Image (cartoon, rainbow, N blue to C red; front, side, top):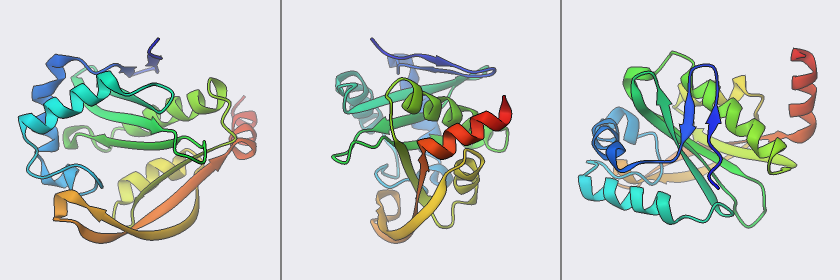
Length: 182
């Protein structure tokens, strides 16, 4: 069963067919797609249809993909992949009209909590391009610590190689942070 998550302002839910148009519009914005590794630019309806089918077919044991819904409807996505090392890896994007409102920090917190509480993860990883201050701030607000950097390509930039900052949040640090807020 798909794990729908709710926060004060967001619903993290399954993608639906009616998400295609707004998703294509938002990912058709180069300012969004250029910060992602595997999203093409321009982003076409065929790309969106492929993505929606992938969301429906991906086994939850390997990948969980949530649509981020605000009061404005679909506003972005957040997902976890379970790579071979078994540590959930978070990836996400948020449409430009919703930047700076704290939505992604809120969504990331919900997914991090899901990883530790429901999946029993010992750590959660993520990463963002070095120039993506907004994303790096989201990760820092959620307690992620930098573990290194590596070259990574951006499909939207014609496979240009950029510096990706790798981060992780351990269960111990997550538990310590939660103890401070209780």
